[in-house]
Amino acid sequence: MLEEKDIQKIKEEIIRAGIEVFATKDDISELRQDLNGLREMVQALVLSVDKLVKSLDNLRDEYFAIRH
Image 1: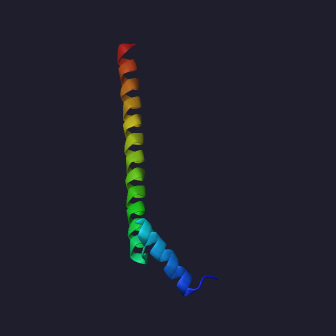
Image 2: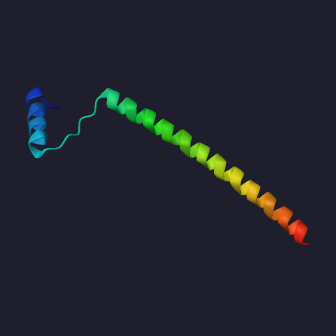
């Protein structure tokens, strides 16, 4: 198991390399909220596209009925 001095040494190496990889609980919570929001938007978009396709099918059927 890593000791505190090992963890500190790793942190110093990461800082020296200019890399930030530490996320707080708040950061992760915010990411989850963003992902949930994106998921809801994608679901709404899928439903909208489905409705559009159904409407186009109905219009195609009506057009075909008028032409024949």
